[in-house]
Image (cartoon, rainbow, N blue to C red):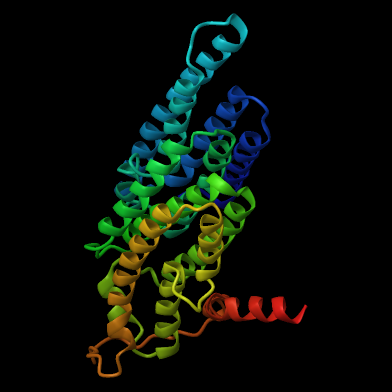
Length: 341
């Protein structure tokens, strides 16, 4: 790829672009921040050794450029309405802005570019796309007050991600559909409470980081690699699959805590239909996570005896195991602190 100095430069500009968007007080300023963010993220995606990454960066550029065009167009419409008193329906322009932002964040029904693009990325780029690149669009969505469009997007996101992830063998696509599902939960929390959205985003980013960190160390990209890789180290195998369950939101792991907060908030707001749909779809996602983990947790699991032995323990895996400890026992620890103080 690039040498490290240019990588640091582009990452810094990407962070600045997001901060400009979050702190701007006009739609034009927000659009400018999103453009800076986009133009600095594309060089990070392109890799000379991998043709798929070039294709992915082009796909990303085209979808984001379309969303930016729509966003700029609708913000100009809003400006015309405010300054020249044109007869333009404000809810209509807000709806256009919302759809552009949903396309930028990769929420359903504008999600089609997301799994295909993830397939061509390295794990660290995929992590940035799943976490950091969501901040700016979600912050802008929180400024808009169009409940019905958000509601449609939430329902579609959770259902499509549950069905889409069922038949996947690629880990990157699996993580992409998982990201769409979590995005649905984040949008639903955004409708009623901004603080819960921030908490959810923080926990989701942490859990995604733990998993992608592990995949990156061992260069895992497909499901069959998971079953044949950790023959020597049963601890690593168990912790990896427990992290999967934590990301899926299975109690008593840490991933259940943000979902618990959203469930509580939705029940307080009497959104029982939405909550039922979301929980049913999450059960489907948990089903395919459990299906992956089931064979690994079985004691009589068949293993290849010709796999090359490799030294599993390194500083990276030790760091991973520490983060996994928080992922597995985090909910217990938070509960203990809560009841002690």
